[in-house]
Amino acid sequence: MQVQSIDRVDHITPEDFRKHYYETRKPLIITGLSKQWPAFKKWTWEYFKSIVGDRTVGVYNNERAGAKTLVNGADEYITFGQYLDMVSKGPVQLRIFLFNIFQHAPQLTGDFKWPDELAKGFLKKYPMLFVGGGGSVAHMHYDIDLSHIFHTQFVGRKRVLLLENSQSELIYRMPMTVESAANFVGWAEQLDENRYPALKYAKAYTTVLEHGDSMFMPGGYWHHMEYLEGGFAMSLRALDQSLSGKLNGLYHIAGLRSVNNLLIKMAPEWWYHYKRKVATQRAEKAMRRLMA
Image 1 (spheres, rainbow, N blue to C red):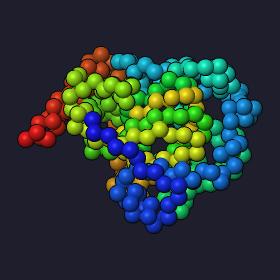
Image 2: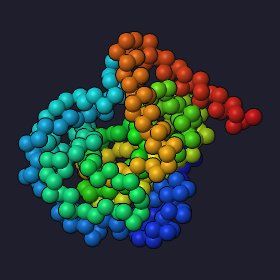
Image 3: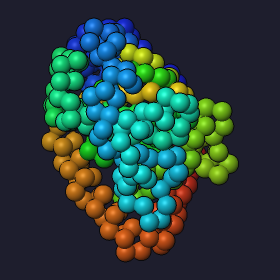
Image 4: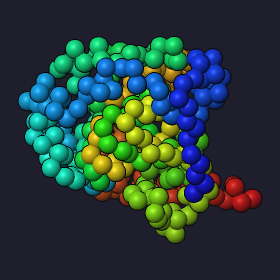
């Protein structure tokens, strides 16, 4: 795989951001965006536990989804406080994603500033928290609504791997899903290019997110995240401003996900293996085109 570092800046003007990153759909790390927010110092494990520790959350382990696993099906449900206690005691390979903590504690929305000067169309009812214990993994996928994401890390470090959506065939995208059949766990040390040879031709970006780093991830970008330490981040989502982008996002949510879940219920074993077979066939065709 051909990997380069994501660009980093402390600050950027709205004009430069739109010209060089938003319009070209190129990721960027802005290190100074969150440093003036109250959340930068205020948001800690202890603070979150004190205000929403009694809320029930779905947690996800590191196992890849099996044949009968529906999209976004949690592995277990516990209170947020119980989960934070587990994380604070040491490495735990469990994570939480799409937790709208702000519905339970709306006062938190006063602790950060929406970057309206950089993008339009923010879904201001849906800021989301992503939490993971050390060693937990968010496997390679892209967000089904195709929103642009501003993802700010608050506690802990997280290694990120990003690929533009045009790389889908080379990373073994499975049909009717936003998931890759390839395994990217531990990719920085060893990537299984023998089993997945098309990965050799994929072009990717990487970085390690640390406290205060805000990552702009354009809509449709594939991402794989590994928590090097227990930590949490917040994602602010902005809809694509084009009509085609909005319609594509609607198709993904209302059509693609529904068909995938229906087939999982009707023929789980057949569909599980068929998706992987098609992903391999498409990757082989993509390789032949590149080598022609």
